[in-house]
Image 1: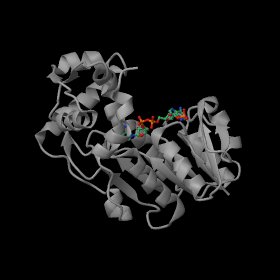
Image 2: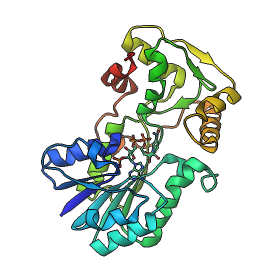
Image 3: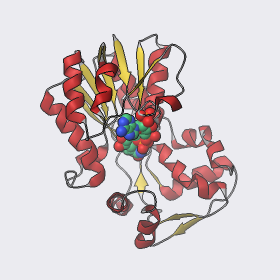
Length: 280
Ligand SMILES: NC(=O)c1ccc[n+]([C@@H]2O[C@H](COP(=O)([O-])OP(=O)(O)OC[C@H]3O[C@@H](n4cnc5c(N)ncnc54)[C@H](OP(=O)(O)O)[C@@H]3O)[C@@H](O)[C@H]2O)c1
């Protein structure tokens, strides 16, 4: 019986597909844009756009477990179709932001919270993975670093415990293939708290060159980020980073505590992804 992996082009989705396929399990890769998907040969590919319920029935036919990216629009239809198809367990890629006191009204947190609530209401067995910031968010600096420009930040001294997407994939695979993590809601971080400035220093060391950091105002950052994301989302992220200047980020569950394997470090992520920071 197949395991459906949504968000198959995403960093975590891809890694989950590769691991399950390598373990010989029947995997169905679901993407909103299947034509752009590269999967190992032998992996089934289906179109699933989580905001378009008409794409659900064929994709869920014969599926017993799902690795789900959160998309509130369409989640009720997804749950209904999954239950009708006989799905027995869903592992949700949620977010630690759902734990914030203002999660209901925060545009970032409410996205994942609404999906968690829909799944809980449906009484479908679920595992909620609630990662903190991904190490791969550093890719947002790649253009500036690649072009020798300073990285402009409003809160360079915000503390984050970035998690390597491959650690999330390892934990997701454990939740899909073993019963120990099943049914739990797990807050996930990397193993070390680093400020943005410290992350950039790691990148500078890996790339063997200086990367200047320039502090800009909250308003300047809001204006810059507003070009790439809705203004409320930019405001929400900036508020999060302002608060994160207070002190080291708490370390929650990691691949070490859950799987007994050392959490991948930010330096490891930076080394693996160094090519993304050179100008093209
Ligand atoms: N980045 C962080 O720091 C962080 C922290 C906590 C939680 N998260 C959560 O992790 C998830 C991925 O994070 P990311 O930003 O790093 O992105 P990512 O891994 O690059 O994944 C994005 C993927 O989501 C899939 N997707 C988007 N809209 C979809 C839709 N309507 N229907 C189906 N699939 C859709 C797309 O896959 P396909 O096109 O292949 O379908 C896309 O490749 C997000 O849900 C985010 O809330 C991220």
